[in-house]
Each structure stands twice: as structure tokens, then as C-alpha cells.
Image 1: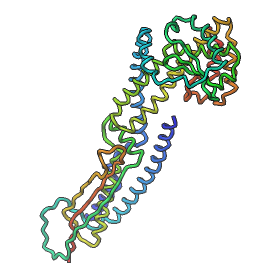
Image 2: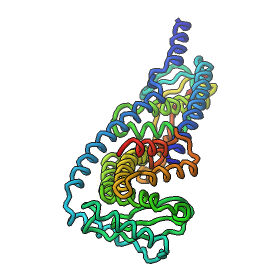
Image 3: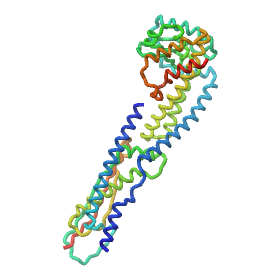
Image 4: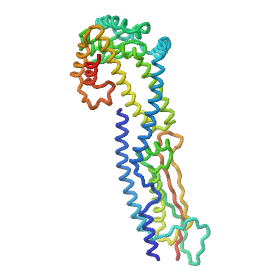
Length: 261
Length: 149
């Protein structure tokens, strides 16, 4: 009798019914997958709707939004140089080609004292070129390609789209997490990667746009090809790393330019 | 980007360390429980208890344990908060805490014949209103140890 009881107790100790049998790691993976799936679905829906309205927005509304968002930009602190004058001449050639660029911003061009090779456009149409880019590229056709790429972003209203994307993301975030820090962190990291893929799609479109501009101005796209060959020489990031970068890999961009007219 | 890598590294490390610590704790608990099988019997909920034997000593015995989940467990639980369901990662933590507290109480009652009127209480000792606090739980087991003459 006593021995039976002892065996029973031993059995109870070894077989613990109070603890769930499932593996925590598997549970974790399932939870993450669920949150990712729901987030991506919501994000895609909201983003498609946002882009749909932005593409159909009138020019007047666009100007109003731009003015509202760009009060903080003070380009006066950057200097004008011979390089920017050269760029302004090119700009005056590009703008009459597209109706989307006319009657909005004046597209002032400024030089930023940075060594990196980069150029960017702010929401009100101000275009910045880095010193590194201007000292590296002197060729007119190449400069046309870079400038047309930035103008392409403006013409496609990419700045408004990325703004709406930011708003949507923060909205979904606050819906989901409601103050829960860990969920916040997870979703924030996911949404970072998504924003990048989207912006790469925009880069691709801007490349196509710039390619078209260079073709119509010079009859060939030597400028674009030269620009990417130069970039290829400069960058040392391996190709598999490209999911984490904002632009498509240079090889892909070169291919796109050479194939599409 | 660095955020997600840092988070994943942290989760991986705490998963490994947490599961090692938990396994060791369970092994330790099992060993002590098996050793204590023939020792004082816990008598839950007996408010009135009669005996004809002479009693030498009546004593209050307590066992306390404060326990917390690791970073990985807390993370999974807070994700689960969103969907709902059993928080299985905390179940093992609570189980460890309860068994540890009872074991300590029984170890304290060494030499006694009975522990009657045993109760188990648990208290959350973290600040609920403050963000970023670690869920911690204090578990107290107490009872009356009785020794015959």
C-alpha cells in the first residue's frame, strides 16, 4: 500500500500537468508570422488606397500640401556655385518636356558640402546635390540623368506617397500596439523593411523616367550607362545585401536602363 | 535595421539561457521532491483537526519564492496578449515558483510529523502602472507544523 502511494507520488512529480507541453520557440514563430501577415495585409490595403488618391490629386492640392510640409527647409545656408549654374541650364531643358513638372515648383538647385555621392529632392521641389557627386561627375549627359531621376521622383509624387506611407504606418502601429512596447518594436522593424521595398519600386520608375528624358534630349542613353558604371566602381556592397538597401542594386538598374527605352 | 538584429540576438540569447536555467531548476526541484516524499505531509484546508496523541511542538512554517520570466518569455507573452490564449511561457514559471515555495516550507518543517492548514498565496511585486517593468511574482506557502512527542 505504502509503496503504491510512493510510486504514485513519483509519477506525479515526473509528469507535470501544470506546465504546457508546447515549445516556446514554435509558439514565438507562429505569433510573429501571424502579426507579420496581418500587418502586411493592412499595410498593402491602406497603401493602395493612398496611392490611388495621390495619383488623382489636383495640382492645387498638391501645392498646398507641399507648402504646409516644407516650412522647415532653409536652403539659404547652402552656397550657389558654377556647378549649380550648369545644373540649372540642364534643368531648364528638362522641365518643358513634361507637363507634370510645369507650373509647380521652380526647382532651385543647391550644393551640399558632403563627400558622399548622392542627390535628393525635398517635398517643395528643392533639389540638393552633394559636393562628392559634383566633383566626381562633370559630364553633361550623366548630370542630366541624375537630375532627371530626381525630377522623376517629383513628377511621380513619390514624396507625397512616402509621406502618406509614414502616416499609415504610424496609424496601424498605434492601432495594433496600444502601448505594448514589444509589439511596437516588432512591427516597427517589419515596417522598415517594407518601406524600403516600396521605395525601390519608386527608384526603378524614376530611373525609367530619367532614361526617357536622356533619350529625348540626346538620342542615346550613354549618360545613364556611364553613371551606373561609375557607381559600380565606387560601391563595395555585395549583391545579396540588396534587400536592406533603399535602391535596387546597380547591376539591376543598369540592366533596366539597357533593356528599356 | 540594427534594431531588429539587436532584438533577435537578445531573444536568441535569453531563449538559450532561460531554457538552460529552467531545466536545471526543474531537475533540482524534482530531486528535492523525491527526497522529501516520506517527510512531513501537507494537509491542505483542514480547519479542524483532531488527534489523540500528545503534541510536543506547534510551529508556523513558511516558504517564499520570488520568480520572474526571462526576456524571451516576457516577449512571447506580450505578443500573445494581442491574440489572447494561454500564456504557456508563464505557466512553467508559475509552476517552478509554487513548487519551490512549497519545498522550502517543507524543508523548514524538518522533524515535524505534519503540516496542517497549508495555504499558498501569490503577490505581483512589480509596478503595474509603469511601462517596461518585468513581470515578477512572489509566492508564499505557509502552514502549521505539528510534532508529536
